[in-house]
Image (cartoon, rainbow, N blue to C red; front, side, top):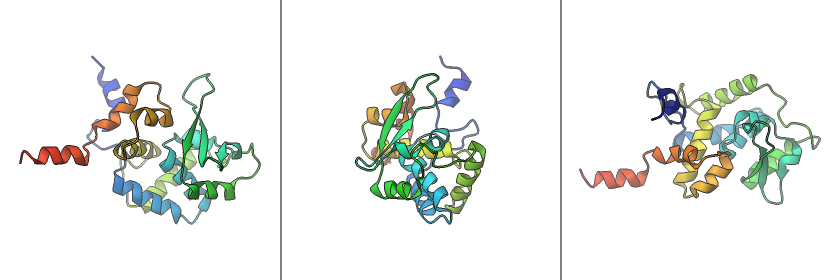
Length: 192
């Protein structure tokens, strides 16, 4: 049996019942707010988080070398794998590649030379602009969870979502299947 602490660590809800992920509508509003952000580099950072599901620290480590315009992908170094050098390539929209290419400088320079805390506050301000309510979901981690939910609801195979998110265990990725989807609601509505 899992401990209470472990159960909440792999849950999409906080102990007080707050949702930790962005819904489809919130994600759409966030992407729109990022696209019109008055600071294009911050808008691009927000879009990278929304379209890749990477961790904030992984996004901040991205250099110009990580952008593959030929394949429309970004190579993300998994920073949570202590001591291991693991890269995962994640496909992204061509429009995001164009924004990244317009922003990059030297191939080995980080695209966002920001501290994690400062970047977190900037992303949170874009979330506020998008009308995302304060709480557990108004965080970069909420974007990561929203990516996982959105990918599975879009029909992406769970093993591919696992690889894109850099999860070592499929059980970790499986938490995104717990979200009530339209199909589940339609089946349940037959009982009413």
